[in-house]
Length: 451
Ligand code: PMP
Image 1 (cartoon, rainbow, N blue to C red):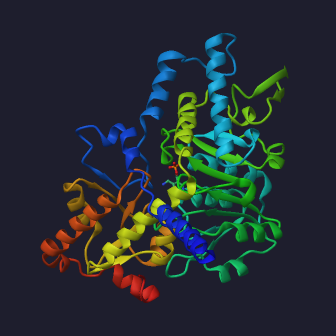
Image 2 (image 1 turned 180 degrees about the vertical axis):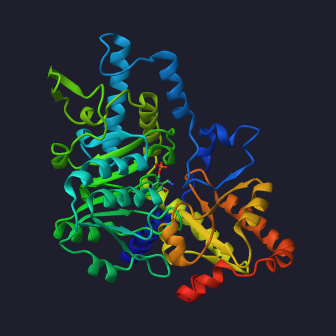
Image 3 (image 1 turned 180 degrees about the horizontal axis):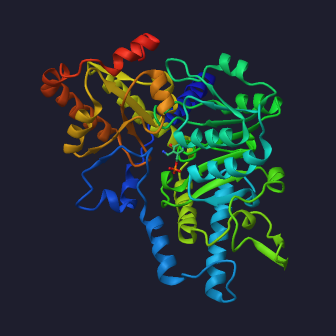
């Protein structure tokens, strides 16, 4: 009896684990015009790290605003404006819930880049001085490096870089050396857009705080794909973009920890932020978040971001993560069976929690491969993916990046692999010799085996 019970229990546990790992969201494709309209329905869209497609309800939400309640917010003394304001503020509440923040900690921006520039132009410009240090990593998107270089020029603070190991993990020993009491900010990405490696943040954030540094997390790639909980992670600032999360372009999110919002000076100045004007020079500002949102914000986009968050939140984040990892796993297995292909990053990690597979075809410029894929209806990104430091470190000029989101399927991955295999079988031998010095040669030179 006990044996039978144990057996049943085991079957249920294994069954649910299996279901978890084999989750399939293909029915979600019905929710996207893109996957159902004649011009685009046969495309394999693997450029989701750049931007995702938008479901009907998000597009409809934009249309609804413009058709039915288009009015400016926070200022109109009439029903239409009150309704628009309510929808806009509801979107803020949805965003706050999405990352487990309070609504006063959520500032609408244009995107991740804008959010990082906000902190660079405000907190960093006032808090940092000559000799202070800012730590970034080699995994960063240029949007999380260039603003800090500007801060460095203007304040004298020094930007230091945590290197990565050959498989794209951060070099934690170097972090140990680089993180000192001089460090005033650690600005790092949760997940690399170029090679998909995920960084375990909790420990780094705790260590940074122990040294008295603030932490900014670039969650542009992670917020759409995995749980991002600001209470659990405890960053001081965190940014992400709406358009990588089924939302529209032109809208993003900056989370600022509540204890810091009082001391921060605004990023921009203008209408919408003013409470009382005593005289020309004495102005009282509204409370946060309006204080930080001068001018007319992207009202329709913010509301549509709320709709995107509603949409994505109907899916379990753990299942999304598993689904994307399954696609990576299938892609990696397929690529490993094709000769002359080198995958960047740790395949072991990507199979567990990736959403991006980035690779190089030996002796061949990536554009030749992507052009072939494009001719076969497959959309991928090539080049350095705005992560030049990483490309230099890992020694590649350009990689081919396939990045997935919820609506992608195992069948699409198989088609991708078959198309690439066909290319390699029919064209590779003739084309490969044309390239003399390869990116892979350099990768070997720097790191030994980069795969
Ligand atoms: N950081 C990362 C990790 C990204 O992937 C991107 C977009 N590719 C950005 C920052 C910049 O995002 P946006 O262009 O939406 O501002």
